[in-house]
Amino acid sequence: MNRNTFNPFRRLHFYAAWFITPLLLILTLSGIGFLFYPEVENMMYEHEFFGQSDAGDMQTMDEAIQDIKETYNGYSVSKISMMEEPYNNRVTISNEQGGSQYVFLDENNQIVSSLDSKNTYSNFMRTFHSSVLTEHTFVRYLVELTACWANFLIVSGTYMTFKKKLLQNQSRKLRFQKIHAVLGLVLAVPLIIIVVTGIPWSVFTGSKIAQFAADHPDWGRTELRYNPPQSDIDEIPWATRSIDQPASDHKGHAGHQSESSASDMIVGQKSVEEIITLSAENNISRPFSIVYPSDEKGVFTVSKGSNTGVTGLDVSPYEETTAYFDQYSGDMIAQIDFEDYGIIGKWFTWGIPLHEGHLFGMANKILNLLVCIAFLSAITMGFMSWMKRMKSGEAKGPKRINKPWSIGVVVTLAVLGILMPLFGLSVLVIFIVETVIYFRKKRKEA
Image 1 (cartoon, helix red, strand yellow):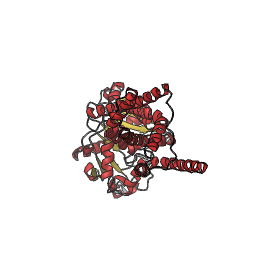
Image 2 (cartoon, one colour):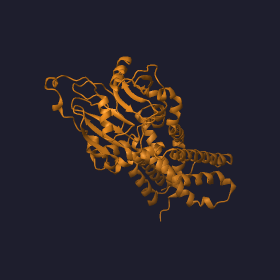
Image 3 (cartoon, one colour):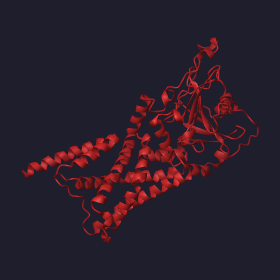
Image 4 (cartoon, one colour):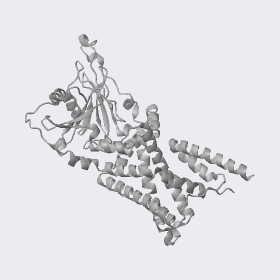
């Protein structure tokens, strides 16, 4: 019987660990930094979030938006975030050059201050975590590949721990290796959960899952979420229906209706104040966001999200809702709640807050932090174990046994490859190289 299982796992575990450790350290440390972004931003941006302007006069939200347009020339409004007290309301504006700012309004809807959206702490840490500040697709592929191989390290490490009976070994020479193994076992389930709940952001697997959800709305977030309804164009005055409508460009957040070409200058359109009132009448409580219609057939989109990435704007997944209002009559055309989502939509909605650390409050943050610290400790213990062997002259890479991989290795890698396609592609390359080496050595031995 072919028993060449331990050697392939050991070699893949060893070399993969050396290859992905730098990125694993970056992902873990940046993840810790992102965990507490609301607490950090509450201190960093105390004036913007909670401060008051010098102007004391009360004005409507529509007057505030007009004030913003005059103050920030060249920018157009793309989204309005109505916050709960004590947070100031936030208006997102953008220009044709791709610049974007957050403008904060006090309780009188007067401008308090603004921030460059790309340079806020939360957005900085998010970019650091997802693409190491490069925003390059290639780096995002590497980040996803690193996360996939982290799952393999857990699986292979668990197998080797029990195969070597490491937990029963009392040798002091193996104490770092034993600590490394114990931490790996303790981390196995929570770390896999953290990796899996981060998949929705991934550039390869995440995009495939999102596309599948869009193609199969019963599994995702319903047909209406992917194809929003339209306003009744008959509500537009007949004399103005042929007038070209202005538009502005802005990139929307993943998972939400695009904010591109949002327009607040369509004839006959309801005011923002009216939409705010209509939202309250339909039991949509703060915090929520309002996105303008994209054109004369578009609708006002009012949404409460669990993974907005905005301090003070996230809600529980079970409170998620998206409502569509006719931009002319103000009638609610449709509303989608968490209960309406399919299994993939619920996974995205529930999993991302768990990954970010705010699904169940501070306890979620602390739990994620402990997992990250333990993971950093496991990496350190693995390195210390290797350093100890290096001092004794044993720090060589695992030797290759020229035997075909066992059925257990092939099946394990195949299953992981199906669940994580990018990992599967990388293993396929390794398998081809291993096969070539195997037959070359066989030929030499013959």
